[in-house]
Amino acid sequence: MTPSNSQHLSLPDAPQKILVADDELLVVQGIIGLLKTLGFEIIGPCKNGEEAIALVREDRPDMALLDIQMPIMDGMQAAQIIFHEYDIPVVMLTAYSDDTFLRNSIAAGVFGYLLKPASKEQLSAGLSVAWKRYLDHVDQRSKIVDLRQRLDDRKLIEQAKWIIVKRKSISEPEAMQLLQKQSRSSRKSIASVARAVIDSNDLL
Image (cartoon, rainbow, N blue to C red):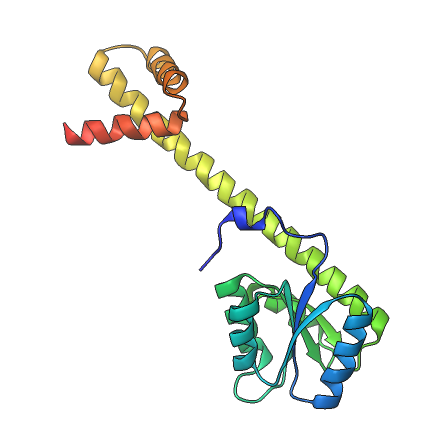
């Protein structure tokens, strides 16, 4: 499920609600304490990926902070579901440093990694960078969708234009002018007018 672009129009400049999942009690308590001092609203903590997904569904955080190694469902499995079904970016907590992780996992919804134990400064910087990556991703996705829509509209208009040329035995520029005139008078987009022309031709 991919949410519509309109859902992203009100994305904040920084995340506010952070879901935290880690099965190590002392680690998660420390992280939550630091996040609260940074001003974040905390959702959780969760002990595994399944609990994280359930809380995401219920509370819709801006971002999820997940430990990679968790029982029942690990962080990477949970990240894919949290991102692809709910469009919420994930930052991973890990005890291991591996640059290939980040390169290979943005498709899975992972936009950053933090090494445990993370300091307050590392948490602040890591979440900020990950959120910026996510905003860039949303912007790029929106541009791709807009480009596809423009290409689809252009195909519709070309198809409708040639239907009018054949129906009325007029030139291509004249057919285009008719489409534009109908668009203005009906207060509909040229693509909508073109679709109506195509649909009526199919009926005939």
